[in-house]
Length: 457
Image 1 (cartoon, helix red, strand yellow):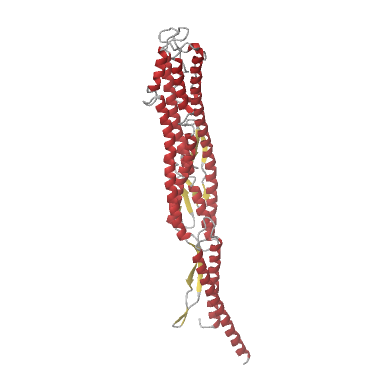
Image 2: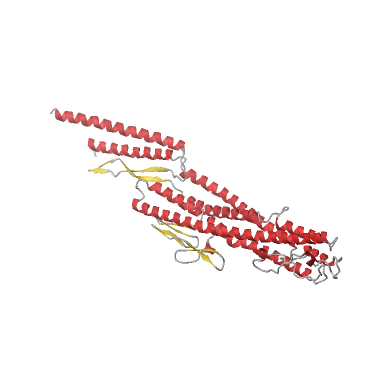
């Protein structure tokens, strides 16, 4: 294209291309501190040449679109690590509360057990003393109350986690609806349209947020994506979202999670905050509750057996010291069966001065009552289990945080905005723009000369 108008067209294409570069660079700089922003750059391509005879004339430059510099593999790794981080954090939060229910200091069940056996030792010095007998009953009531309170708080905490499950499911559904909406927008725009990269950023940020709540698998279909849980429950397909639901399960006493096709996926969710909450609600807390019930029922059975072998202050055979309990709910229902101190069976021969049966009752402190452990050992194991859950979860969270930080740094090296690089690009586009503008000015002067020459003829 050897005409001046052709030359002007080439210069104009350069002007428009460099302007796009300046606008893109300016947008990058403006979003330097915008969380989740992905650096963009103009995609420029040489225009198809114009053939005139045996000569090919350049036709300038074409702006193909604005490209977001994404690291798709890194993003998938970040999403996966975010799922682990969310699970660990939710689990730690839950188990840290449970840990406070099993103190290893001078409070809680362990101290109440120690107080009870100490009261028996005190009574053995004067077995007919009503005040000391009442102290034993008071200590027994204190021990039972400690079991009741801890069991009740474990149940309350599990109910709170159950409410968290419902809340998280609602948030998951809200996010999947937004992702489906963005899928629809991206499909209509096309990858070269204005604003396409911004919508991709929004979708990636939402997927990462969703990963912090539930385990997610991403299937990239080009302009659209499909989201499922790791086990295949459909969450998003194109511009449609498939909401999860919760329903109370009478057998377990908690809310179960269902996919839209009616499949119960509660036991299949392992990642994100939902996975950590379910792990604490359905595994860790019930395990502590079972162990606590085992200690309560074993202790009650052993003390009742020993108590019935003795005689009370009136010379009558002793009855149950505690209301018999066993199995699930033993700790919550543990209660002292007598309130009259004279009914305490301290004697081994029926005489008021005998303390022989107190020795039998005291000996239970050193007998295996639960999982082949003494009462204090069994409680110590509860303290260890609760503390170990928090410790293990914290170690996992620390490792996940470190890995996530490394992945984000790698992603930033690809997708992050560098002021030095953008300043260099800005100067480059500015000079190219000025050169194109100078070329246009030159061609304009030449056209004016040609016009004047034509008018003079």
